[in-house]
Amino acid sequence: MSGQLPEGVREPAPGEDLSGRIRAIAAEYPVRRSAVMPALRLAQEKYGWLPPEAFREVGDALGLTPAYCKSIASFYDMFHLRPVGRHLVEVCTNISCALVGAQQVLEAFEHALGVHAGETTDDGEVTLRTVECAGGCGWGTVVAVDHRYREPVRPDDVPAIVADLRREEAGDGG
Amino acid sequence: MAAKGLRKLLFEHAENHDLTRLEEYEAVGGYASLRKAVGMERQAVLDELLAADVRGRGGAGFPMGRKASFLPKPGDTPKPIYLTANADESEPGTFKDREIMARLPHMFVEGCVITSFAIGADAAFIYLRGEYLKEFEIVRAALEEAREKDYVGPDVLGSGYGLRIVVHRGAGAYICGEETALLESLEGKRGQPRSKPPFPAISGLYASPTLINNVETLATVPKIIELGGEEYARIGVENSAGTRLFSLSGNVANGGNYELELGTPLRTLIYDIGGGIPEGRELKAIIPGGSSVPVLTAAEVDTPLDFDSMAKVGTMLGSGAVIVIDDRCCMVQLGLRVAQFYMHESCGKCTPCREGTRWMVQLLRKIDAGEAEQTELDLLLDVCDRILGNCLCPLGDAAAMPVASYVAKFMDEFQRHLDEGGCPFGGSSSLDHVTAPVDQHHARMRSEIEVPVA
Image (cartoon, rainbow over all chains, first blue to last red; front, top):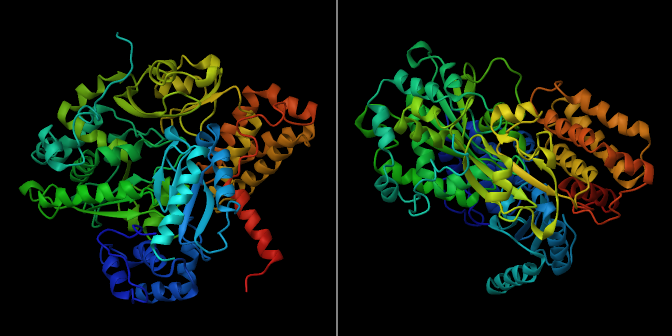
């Protein structure tokens, strides 16, 4: 899930203390609370999702309560309040994609991964979910794999996409 | 007058040049408009925007020059002034700002700087949709290039004007495209709309005067400065000056973004440019301006794509997202999928929207399943009516208006669901049983109740 970081910020190392970098982001804004979204994104990079300690860490760095930080995270779809797979497959099923067969693409992923939309594979590797309009409507069906858009995707393309993901895991030693 | 159609103003050089690279953008005249603008008086730049009569490209269509002129002048306010670029494109059917950021990032940045200069902004914030990762990387790279050449920075082209641009990434919330929700989100809050007044021009970001413009609107500014406002206003039709990038999608052969002179007939876009309806199907309906707007029937396909012509047929140009729907689509299911989207994206602040969109989904589900009584179809329209105009922002209206229009224009189809006890398409509709994100959330909540997480 690389590439989800704010401008000029490198990926955090596992276990790294984020407070210095969160404060550096906050300096970009007239009011430091504005940094809560980029800070949560950093924390999500570190933990893979947003566990209670992530809210404490972000809150401490920005002078906010953990509860406030969680109230922000819960508003936005891209923040994960529970563990998700190492890879995220998102299928747009809004009207433009649905009109050209998004449901069939989704079902092809469900079949290939052995999970329903909203679930994670048993090995914890891949989370599959539907999303609202991804903004590639003229090239539907749009599928985002780890936030990189594939468009258009047809049901026939799905086995190769899943095989790529599985190969990547093997290559990662995972 | 010649028939209107494709007309490349923004994308003039984009076919033969990689305009994401600064030197190529400069080679075709890039940043010359900024150089020209910083040599002018601020008011003279504003006057060009006013003369261009350019209307906002985000959806509401408010004249940009007028909106900019509502802000206090830099010397008349003790507060800083801000420009906010609305790059949170998420109206279903719309993918034009994405293409502008991916292919014309410098034109967008140049427009931001010229506009900031015109209003005397101390800083500009680009609120960029979180899902648009590639576009974020391209805009960030363009900004770095622009800073190196002093197009952005403490002393823009030696003019003495300084501007800082901060890219702020969203995190997945349609409502943050609404301007006051966007400001809340940028301030580090939940993206819930504010009540207006005060309008952002007076009290916006951090309670300071703020101008908020869409990506495409800002990307148009260099061209307006290059041509001059009056010359720009000659393009298009009355009350709809210039070109717009239309996003064409759905059941059409050649989906994509097309820059058209305003006033181009829908038919030209769908058939001549878009290649018509594939697989020998018939055109059934057209959503002309993103999922929020009332639908048009196939008989209205000759309507010109401009603000006034769309208003005349009871709909809106909106975000310029033209969604083509063929005869395989059940209009009840279309209404259901649209209502599910707005239910999912309702921020929860205003009761009519929060509860009403939920009611709409439940009623449409019953109608689709053939389990609804006649009174429940009436109730659906009643719920739409109770949402319309009763919320702080247009999100609730954006659900109620299109769904009410599907009932009005395709009443026979809705009625058949009631009379025949089911969908007349018998499971063969293109939108049959589409899984929406709201379905997913419900599945998750049920499983939590049954199997508590340890």
